[in-house]
Image (tube, rainbow, N blue to C red; front, top):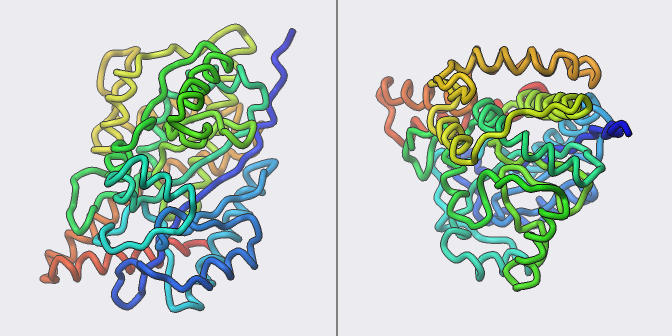
Length: 378
């Protein structure tokens, strides 16, 4: 019996930081009217995050990438306009260049109170933002099978997205320091492979029945079967500062899933590698981003990222045509050429220091660029 084709519907979630355009610091205690006005203009599309200086947006279920891009642009633009009306700005970056978690005020919600109670200090340090992409995979067993195979490509997607090189004013020398912060939490990172949806649910129910977690929303892996929707949710990426880069990454993710589904229709599968090996590439993507290559496990050698990207684009060419996102997928080459947000932030910071600015002044210049770039193309 042929495997039914999934819908490959799309949903994109982004998290932004609210900043004061004068001090360039985080808005630790923004007016409640910011989130209230967002909720009024964008009902059920905007929600507060763990810290009050954060705002999360989410598109509706979108039939294709063009609809997702339209919806995401509307969300970014509207939230940015509302922030400006309150003398604030938003930045799309996974960490703030110099903001500190210590003075931040947290959102008063039962879920967040429980998070603080269960995890302690690591939860209070979660001054990080991410980009999540949902792709509709209606069959549970197929969802888990594709998750097992998709693990291999997660470092490749992370490398395209990096936007968190700084932490509390320090150049961490990582392109994605966000994941270093997030790794302090339990149930994060690359998931182990599962035999099927029932196998996954049995493990999940063990945690629920023993009172460790309430539900699957507290499984925070880099990729997971969504606890709320019939989707496979990719969570490894930093939030790209340019919205068009978010769209490109979502397009590649959806196309990779369709490519893996095509393989399954012919009784083929992507070779599954150990979590140990995948984690090594995950670390390299965190540390170097696009700069120093990833391991090709089949060749047993380090391969430049540009080569790996071209191989991926070749793999998914047919799928990009079917999903009508050829141009969006091809834009990955432009990310490679101009580099990610993390690269630009570091370059601007170093140029500021070379021009005689203080460390704080150089970092403020980075914030100014993030404010401008977050609205690019809107």
